[in-house]
Image (cartoon, rainbow, N blue to C red; front, side, top):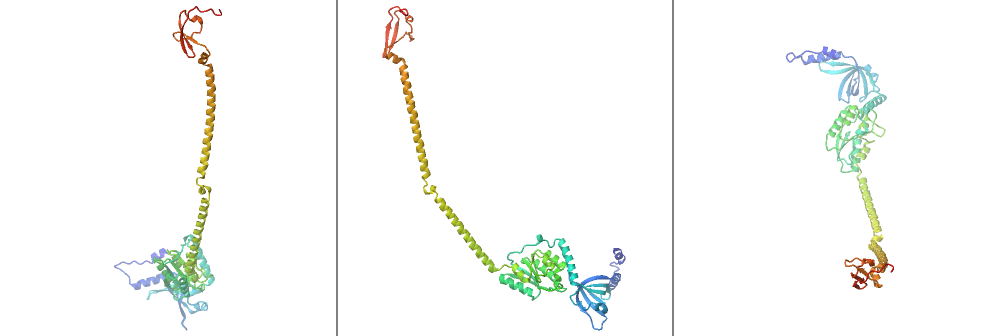
Length: 416
């Protein structure tokens, strides 16, 4: 293909430009070389004039806001005329054509096939699996909603029941709630680009805390824009939490899976996003009563504990322990005195006996019985008669004093 395009390239320069008509002719030549292609889109306009042999269709891609004109012979369209109307999705087998005078691209259809509900659901299931594999539906990427949003962004149809349900129910629950509403087409070929633009615009507003995308119930084809891949990716890229409130409980477009919160209906979205002021006041009252009971219970327990502590003997008779210790100390002192007295008495008795024995055995006691102790002049005791010289002066110690005596005779022989 690259070689083909290179061969179709035109050499031009600022000095040798080519006219616009020539460019259009060249484009037509390139397009003529293309073969027939299968194209899917949504019919936005259908022109079938009576007696005309050609039917004109406008085929649009909602995801990219692009449309092409499709022409076909009446015989081709009559095969599906009973099943196809404006808004229906079709698959067209057509040859691209370029109308050089106007510079307009169109398709010449040789076959048109309506896209059935079963086929749509099968394609949605394939898209669902592909997006899930990318992690767009993962629970860990979903953002928590604020408890009380200051401003709520609402994307819905103009003067729709979904808008009325969200606004009325939200204001009944919390009268001070504020909304930033964006009215868009919620079905048809313009729905996807308008919803994407509204979501991106609300996501860029810092005062918007949460975004609701709401729509009432409808058929599978009516809710198809909310399963568009471009819308799903736009919601996944939002920084602001997004709530999906599409259709009724059984309806489940892909927007429900990528949104941070899925509400079964627009009324349910209002209930999940905005708290009920009456319920919150009741909850506050209950919490106050519970806190008051807790405080009273705590005070009662502490009072009972304090009363139990004050009822203890140590607080009733604070000197009881001192008195008991005083009695114990007095008893110990008395016992000590008795033990010391017994010890002193016993020592005194032993001392008296010892003294009596000492007195009885002392020389003084012997002297008192009439004995005397003879001593030489140097103080040594005379123990034998032959130790005394004749005429030697001796001292004689008696019980009461001493005497000086002289030896006048020779010492008598032992036993003589």
